[in-house]
Length: 580
Image (tube, rainbow, N blue to C red):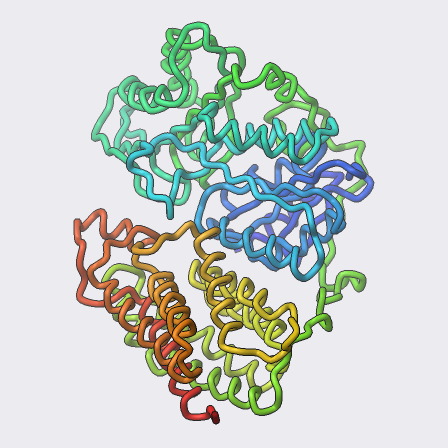
């Protein structure tokens, strides 16, 4: 009950006017009479537990909507899409401001792809905030990247002002992207315990969700050494010149007392004054981590633009009082409702526009393939759990089995196997709803992107092996774009990409369809086995490998092996049912 997001948001809207709460999607949006027609809409969100981010920043001058996931978990793509539909029309310009975490990248990315393909949204962009400077550039893996921290709040403040003042989408995006790309904003966070008036268990660079820091310190008598370390990392981005004007944001992670915060500021601000010309100081709970005892320091280089102070000064009217502004007492009362009760939003998008279809014989083969895939994955649940237990949570088999069970249930009931594009859309939603965590988001994104291969019919409307190659290509490209995973990172992408490459070669060699499918399955199996010798560079396994120093494993990557399993099941069922 105390970590129920819906209950928390229900209390939030009771205390603040001018908002709408979509209770079955955990979204907070500005009331329709508060939304400005024609302005660029800004939407942000992420896991709950970071309040007042992001729901506390919905209102005039900042966000038009915030989508809230479970505690420290990304919101679902379904919630993001439905929130978008409540805030903007398909012809509106909408910018998603997203912190750089894998789950958020995947789910917001999937939402954007669905909104474009199913509902006709044309002007959608994602701005990834990666203001964390604790991890040096040379140490940053592309698949993980620099994390998004409290600098996101200043980003929302500035871009929100620009949107309210009528700036165009391209101008807003360019302002935010260049600010981040050229290092005009930097954040360093750390956690600690205060015991008997001294700092203990100091972890420098620790993430907002418990991600490991870059350095641990023992007992400290004060904050001096911590601040020296933090400012050294910040200086790599924002040079310490006395004429360098900066704004400073000191963020309480939620569990630091005002007393301790004052002690910290008494050390930090004089040290900053030696190196920078501090024009503005913001202090408070801007982006918390539940009740974590810790702080973060954000520096914003004002030399980036002579309009920054104008944007920071722009009056806002949001629930959070950290930036001043009038209270919401005079606004219309907030209201709560269920999205599923709104009849005008219950359309399913572009269904009925699909041109390519399977004949009855092909539909029978597809059903046999999907049935064999589902059964194979269920039969290998414990094997996948064992593989995952070597460097993970030991539950990959369970999560994949959840998806397999849902696949088989829907195959016997509502799954459309007549139109391949529609089938892939439905499979994408099934995987999103039934496979948890990052794996579910990746499979959902992969399947949704694959449907693009079957959208248009050319002069010959017959579906061939080339369509399946295009589907693989679309799916793999989506994984690389949003997960930012690369070949050799020891993930499911490794067998998928090897399968794509070998399938392409087989088609160019004019091999039969059966042999092409066999080549694909064999390639997936070979590359899945090869992941035993790969160093994990993505997800939880990458932290395990870093801590253990291991570069080889007894078992292959469980996600990669799952791909090999369903690829072989696909090939076996196709070979059994195919008639030349």
